[in-house]
Length: 128
Image 1 (cartoon, rainbow, N blue to C red):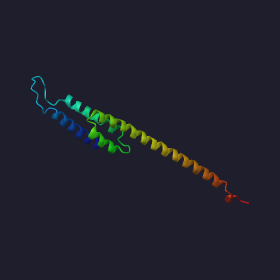
Image 2: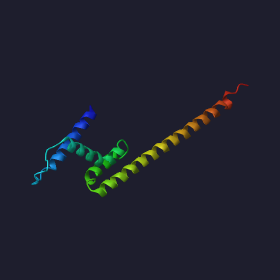
Image 3: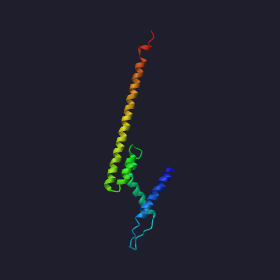
Image 4: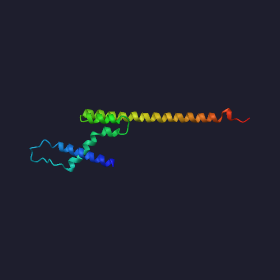
């Protein structure tokens, strides 16, 4: 259901975007100002490219902040590249956190195994 909603919202936004481009009526007789499938597809592709940095770091930490920065500054090419770089940095930080967490869990498992071995050989359990 959510995917359908996302598709509908994307289609509406791209339609508004393409229709907004037609506000300045052209005086040239050969220009076609109708909304066509090609224009809708071009609008959807442009929206996809616009939000690539947000898509890259979608379920990572601080992705909300990148979405806000992307919406506000990505219309400039420099802002889009900054968002793109930030998206990859967020991914690296997220990956680093995951690796550190896994390493700590392995160390804790080793300590638990050592504690079990020590408990097995403790003098309390020795029968005399």
